[in-house]
Length: 396
Image 1: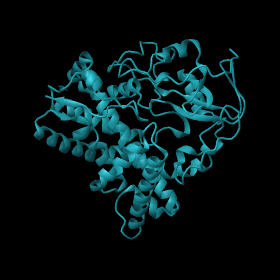
Image 2: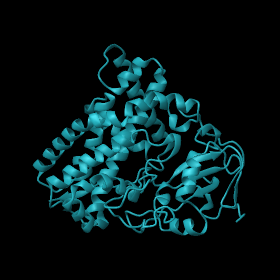
Image 3: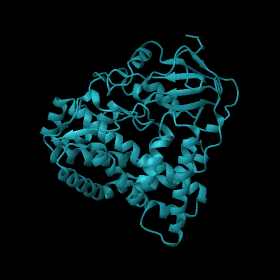
Image 4: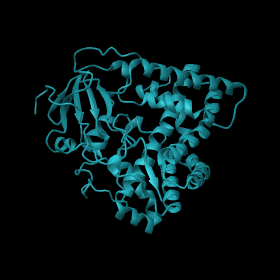
């Protein structure tokens, strides 16, 4: 295959709320490195197979740096430099400085130490939910408060301020916010974190933001950028996984029954839900720093490449035992839900701990939990970077 003309846009239309667009299956089988045109008119490449996604994300010939983005070899993309502290848009050695500073604060050991606090928060939210006597919106009653409370406690952000930062974060993670709205939300979030960090110089508390402030290794603007990233990622993604994972289990009663019959399956069920649902719905972008050949396609230096995590996680070449099927008893197999390479999700152990605690307690507390509306009426987050549900009416 040598055709380098964009012939399609990135698939976005789903026929099932739990599956990526069906076109990805055809692409994996017939054209795993496909030329595409993106919504802004840019030409680039879409990578859909598991091993190829891993290769691109782990290969230093592909850059994460926004300032290096090219548009189909047609010259430099006129993008502003990423704001200070946005290490997701940096390459080594700049990225390494931030990652090294943060990694020790999200270790498996530290997340295990946090588990009792997570379980306490889960129990308190379930008590409040039970008192409401249903039906309730599981997103607002449970799925969103749990990770929000946890990340606020971990970072040292007052939970009382949640309406402000959740409103701004909802704008930032929209697929197509207006430039003005996006900019205002970004400025507001950064300003909020900057002022909070400054207050911790004189009045430190036992939290990550205080630790970063007193490390002396970050400027005020970098502190604001790092804090925004951690706050956004710490509640948006996990909230979506808890709600969408619950909906998925309710729509797969045989899997839900297996999980209720054997709670020891929960660790594996969390991994399977992460793989099966993969909420990063439009992929992860990189820029080729040099010419690279992949599956017979010549990816030119400066070309934009987008890898589909959701497609890679459904690749039968990687997972031979029917990857299109949810199986909470599936033997563990590596997946791409948290990405791969140096940018792999920093908070993945926290997300796992929250999902396990939340789903375990929810299913135990409400054995008759069910949707309160037909599944077709559940509003999906097709308009957001992180897929999920806007609302999930449930009763019991």
